[in-house]
Image 1 (spheres, helix red, strand yellow):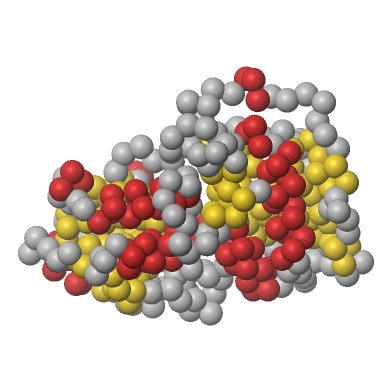
Image 2: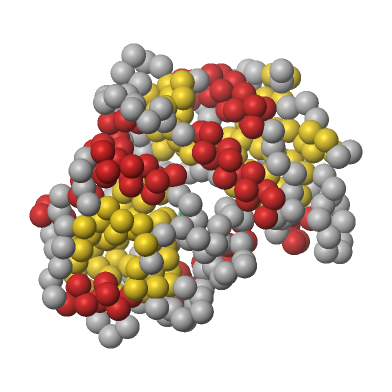
Length: 349
Ligand SMILES: *Cc1c(COP(=O)(O)O)cnc(C)c1O
């Protein structure tokens, strides 16, 4: 189905799989497919390497660019499975529509993932806590100055072996001034510009000693939306509370998996609007037991501190937590093929 040019040298022997810096080590091949003349052209798999771009490439000027992030895991029998790739493909196309870009046909996308990962199967780590991160992206390639949708696009997938993302629990600050996403905006899409816009407010928080922001709604800054580039979850009085998805809260696949696994485990879990005030009250009266982020890169990322307007709340010692650990263990064991995949989430390559 695709043209395949196999690399005649591999850099795999230079990789220390026990100590991989996240997103800095790339597998030997990538997948490329261009959209020209109103249709998708034949895809190709080729050695990983630089892309050459005209300086007027529209994505660089007007930001028509989207991405996805997903993972493949080594299975006990030595095989490799991707985790819920169909959901990432669907979300990619939702992002494409929002940014006025052509959708990638689902079957071609899936086939590209399978063939690319099969070719670079040796790059899927064998060790605990590690996986192959998969980065599909799409960007506008017309060489044109002037704002309009591009006519041509390039779709690329590359992969990176990765270890854990954050090592220690993160300090987060509730953001009351800046906004990640607004109703009617692009927050539900994985559009490149969303992340660019979050950098400066995050840097200001970093300067104050926080690692990440807890984003609030654009209009009133009274409801918690997301944690950095992850979905957020809280445990109050033993109940797991997850902000509901919306135009401004991205529908994370880790979030959805965590909710379903929580239900399987008999954990009391709800998805609803979460007020900053109720969290602060729970923090004050000792019922805010756990807080964590949910996302593909970090999986379950524990919070150590939540900075409210006037004060910092220190969460209880994670050793006393129960729900975040249960969710992480359940998620890990499904993805690593150690427990039964009752939801049909693992897709072998
Ligand atoms: C990607 C992303 C998430 C997490 O989605 P997953 O599918 O779980 O990786 C959450 N919020 C934002 C803003 C994101 O970009």
